[in-house]
Length: 399
Image (cartoon, rainbow, N blue to C red; front, side):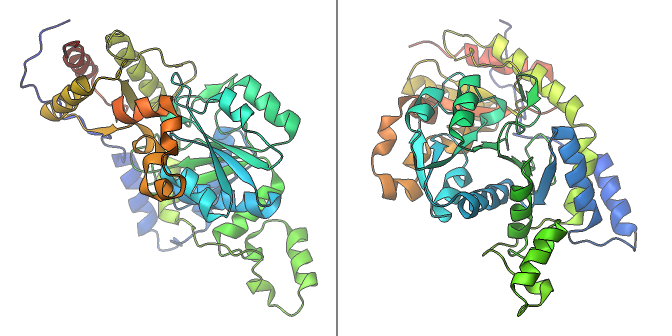
């Protein structure tokens, strides 16, 4: 361990310079072109196509946020599969669970695997029933949450898997990218993520029926948004009393994005793989330099792609947690408590009024809630800052 000045300022935000000069120049050129059509049009379609090719799926639908991707996916699930239960994680972003409630489905909660922060496969399999309509799995902060056992069991039972890959695109499992294993996968292009359109999200799938439903749900449920001429003609023939331009198949939403966002996304996609490699190296460096007696360093990193560092105390210790908080604040390191979504979602008011004290039944996520953090990881993060922070963290005394 090196000696670190007690007053050193690291000036370490959650994300730095995620919109580059190249992105700005592409946006300026688009705006300056008098032929440009700013609302959803050719740039959106091109971004969807390029994203599908990068990911390795047949279809993608660009929306205005990752939360909207969750919303239209779960709404489509309800329309296509009917009412019932959806198995959800206790550690996730709020929209993963909120959309299940909003769609009139019933969330069924499971604890996490502490090495991946994703749902415990054992608990998921124990909670599958005849009423299970889907398993909505979150890949937390770049770690893969899939297991072969989970995929095989869901396939055998014919239960759809939905992957929330908002925090983990570029990560792989068994040689395939996360987001290609499920019936649907959702992505977020929020500013701090691997790729940003400032705000934006994507739904990807290989299922043509789901693709058409999501496209319609994105734009008010309008049939004219479908790409299938046969589907459109079926609605037209069934409803001759309606203007073909205004047939609303579903009670949908307006969650379209813009050409401006798609321009930035297309430019960012060109450097996504290189940036992801840098993030992988950063995470390996961070975890390898932390003291494993004080912090959890045994995360399942194979194939991971993390836009944030996970910092989790090995043992429950309020005094050390408070010392870590003070250290991060003193040295100018931005952080979030509880890792993804602020920790155990069952402690949040919107769920606690429905489920009371159920949060206490999930000890693994409870540990993350009280003793876990995440810190920004971005391509131009200096390695000396990583080393300095690890030295500072390792110097926090044992009790």
